[in-house]
Image (cartoon, rainbow, N blue to C red):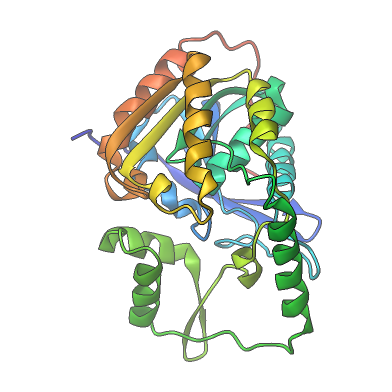
Length: 316
């Protein structure tokens, strides 16, 4: 098993127009910057077990995506969509004065990272996709239906009177999270709940915005996904899990599209590997994932010359 390296960890808070984006930072002040993006309904604790196993020369910034963990929710009436999250990544990079950096994303975070890498190719030197294909195309014939569904869900939510959030005991919150993610280990559940719960009178409520459950109304086709993929200049590592992402698709065509996206990664000489484990293997069993990510960072990032200085992030 890979041995964990003891590195300092600090809390991060960055202002945005509607509140703040929170997160955690590992590593030396002037280490090569690596921005880590978690998956849907998780938080930056998703990287707690993996980052200590990665090269200590990097500075890892893991953020709670907006509406998750300790970060602020979007304003009333705002949708949660991939382009909005890409804008948030740019906000974080600008606040930390990062001109070029590496992205590590899990699941939804990987899709956000890939889209960012396509839109801002000059800013990303390496991209790691954990149990994701980077893009999640929708069948062209289904796009209008899914877009309408996402809009209708938001409008129905807005018409409801103020709902009191359900209050849980810690034990019941554990049960609920495990019901939604049965492959999580007990330790992983506790890690995610550190930032996933807020204490209130009588117990705890989940911190994430209920609106993140709605369908993403911004959809792209396979053709658009492949065009975006072609714009990424960064070196790419895709780490899939045997029992993971491709078993949980909500739309039948997505599995077929996934194989096309993966083949295009391979055709461009990017690395695609498969490891034993489930969708959260990077959190449950990080020692399975860490060797691939570490080797990738060493060869594609740390071995490359650095012609720029990175600002400190610990005092932001």
